[in-house]
Length: 376
Ligand code: FES
Image: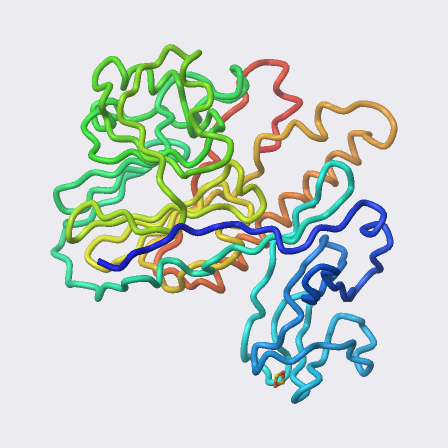
């Protein structure tokens, strides 16, 4: 067996709030004063993008492209390749490479950090040839919201079981009642993956039933710095088989089945996504990740599933006065939804999964006062 080390997120450059406020629109070159390494930070209308100042061709250094009046492109000093920083695509040679991006983390004090995930595509380790599947050997069943059941040969894998009760302090309720046997299926699962701590994914009312019927059900979570089960002791739910899994390492279940949990680029401290591989066929579930694995994901997977609706934030519906008029809110929400859908559509287009399944947006806000939140 090859020895694998887990995927890490490393801060490669930190800027304080003052330096960040001085960044100009478009291309900014930055050097780490300690090790002399160079970075490019692009400030666009959609926020920041960043990468190392290193050309994919032969490692040349980029400078401003004076021929580009839009101010988005840089030019390599070695052989004149050009990179568009707003898309991170090389434009010359056309349709060639994508630049590896760094994650840009904005800090509460206005500072900024560039974070590098490494390795970038951990699923390439130890590849397996896809084997022919028999009809009915793999079955994927939607139960509710983000809860999916995968039947993979003899094994059952369950994702994010929220099968009963409310989430977010009675704020969210299931849109679809779960099938009558959903809890039985949960209790019979061989593997249960919980992607993150939000209560529409980590559902204590559901886990309470599980803990009463099968306290040693095998649960798998990523090794996030904020533990998924941070509230377990107070919750009085007794689960004795919670496995915290390192990021970016294949977990072998048997000779045909393995899975790998990866971190989110925007919220590596709490959000995760998963690849499940059965007989060489991949299922990718990016759940609620804002930028799953920093935007680097396997192409042509057999099935990809992801969220498609907005998240749990009450902003801006819970804000009154000032610019937060009803029409401002309506426009803001419309734009946010459009941005999210665009991003998801782009991601699906670029990854070309054989099947794409949108999920994890199926809840209602049932309290009468929640009509104010009814944009989902
Ligand atoms: S190294 Fe950049 S173009 Fe060759």
